[in-house]
Length: 107
Image 1 (spheres, rainbow, N blue to C red):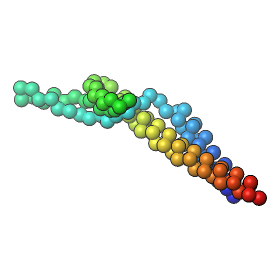
Image 2 (cartoon, one colour; image 1 turned 180 degrees about the horizontal axis):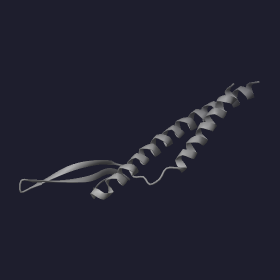
Image 3 (spheres, rainbow, N blue to C red; image 1 turned 90 degrees about the horizontal axis):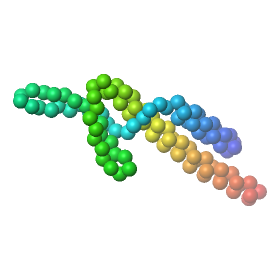
Image 4 (cartoon, rainbow, N blue to C red; image 1 turned 120 degrees about the vertical axis):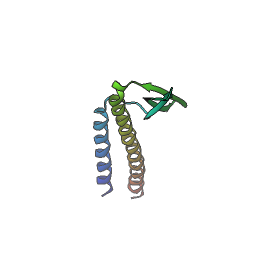
């Protein structure tokens, strides 16, 4: 029974690995539209803000790259979700494997 659970976990990990291979360009962060006021005129612009290696970054994004940056952020979030799931499964797998080994050695 528990061997089947191990196999199920391994299968799900393999599926995650396959999904990760399909992820394209990515970058962390949040994209926001800002307004710059000058001489009673509004000048909208986009910026991306993110933290990487414990440093905060903010960059301007040209209008023609907004859709691309949104896709990169979406890919990064998917990457993080998948890797977190992988770690959760790896922990379950390790615990279950040890439990099975203990039961086998007790027999």
